[in-house]
Image (cartoon, rainbow, N blue to C red; front, side):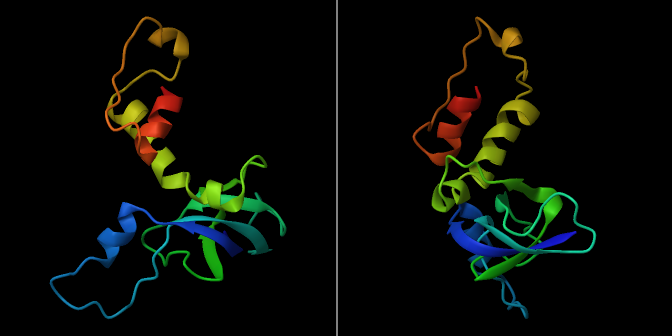
Length: 141
């Protein structure tokens, strides 16, 4: 289900420095960083059904695979979305991990209802709203 994506932009996130941080033992396989990616689908695998060559996409890659700091990147189509036309590639690459983190914090961990009617007259304080995750959390809340 892999897509071959021509990488146009990659964001840097805490996951990058955590993967790159010193380990207790030397790793035999170097790791390419960059898991927030935006680009253009170049080729689709035989089992792909969601995308076509030429589609503009963005995604948070799979940490068990190599990152996207490269000219081309293989990614499972099931974790890819179509890039919003209103965003350029750099803007789109800045969204995936921060958006997933904010979404999971609000709706999966804090169990805030996704139904805005259930949240009327409720108050939520978001600390650190100037950062990536906080600014997305404000928009989702």
